[in-house]
Length: 173
Length: 67
Image (cartoon, rainbow over all chains, first blue to last red; front, top):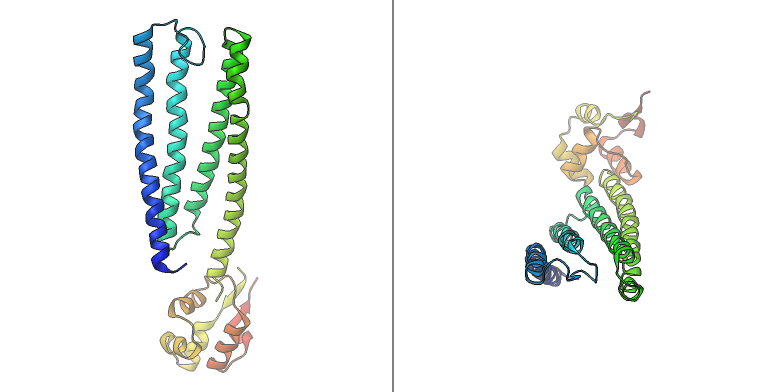
């Protein structure tokens, strides 16, 4: 890939990441506002979060949305910083290892978040029919995120070894 | 590290500056400086060969082991 193609690719990646980050920041703010609007318009016993009754649903929804969006925002911001370092021809630095690890941990947190939703739904749903419908949606979601998080952490370790080899090679005259 | 690089000693003996040595050997000034100040982690045989040729010395004159 020549310099012109590389610049174009990085520019496109930066634009995509900027759009996604802007959308997520907007969603992050919205995730605090929407549960309040729903609880005020429908009242406390509307089963507002996947059929979970009562005020608990609203509290849970208030925490779940921001945490989910926050974790995705962390991933996108770290990816953006990695793009910047690569475009500056400095991919092999310790900061990028920390960023890749952050992405891995954010995915693990997302997986744990999905698992907690699954457990809450199973424990607090009114009927077994409701439990089976909504639990089936989440049962594989958390595993996918946990799996992806572990893969990224392994990749970060391989990248760390690469950085060590690169630094050693830089000091070989 | 226990390996000492005595490049500055040999350069003084042969009365050659870092710039001149860099030009003769074909190694950048920054790399030669890394070598001279003992920050290098390893040296290639080809580099050692070029240095010995330029400074008319043996590898043992440039590299020393100290416990």
